[in-house]
Image 1 (spheres, helix red, strand yellow):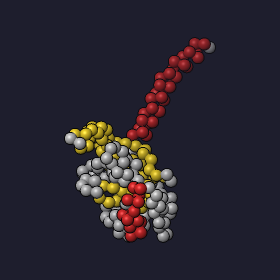
Image 2 (cartoon, rainbow, N blue to C red):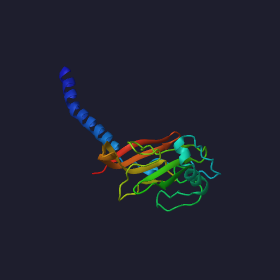
Image 3 (tube, rainbow, N blue to C red):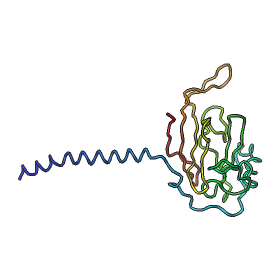
Image 4 (cartoon, rainbow, N blue to C red):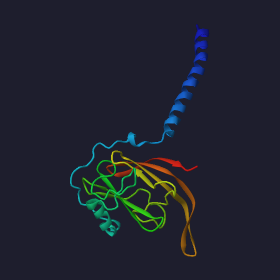
Length: 201
């Protein structure tokens, strides 16, 4: 009886090892899956009159005209798929948000996200690094659209380069060790949450 149990245990070890290997492989593959727009659907698309933007911080006040006209007139509002200007009020991201874009000199791009139901204003979550303004995107890939988004999805893809080091040269800020890649964010009630980074190879 003891011998039988011993043999059963010995025979089960390779199977157990195989099961563990398959579980780890499946987990690793799931971690490698690139987020897709359809994986994060918006629950509704806003159709009413947009709320007035709640501009409370000094930075929001500084860009009050641009943000307000984006909400009320659709200025700086683009289709996240085609890049075409919509030029009409209404959502273009995650059901009830409008993503407003404006330039600040090549290759600078600034953006704000406004909840059309509440008027709450969100900056992009990647305004890190010395010298970057509250609504300024980091350096974007030259060959890719800097932002990709859909009105029917809560997913936002930002193709940006983050500088890991900054230093001064003759009084000017310089950047080095840039890490470029696609950054995948999901929109929620409190703004965007980073769920995945895919570095450029």
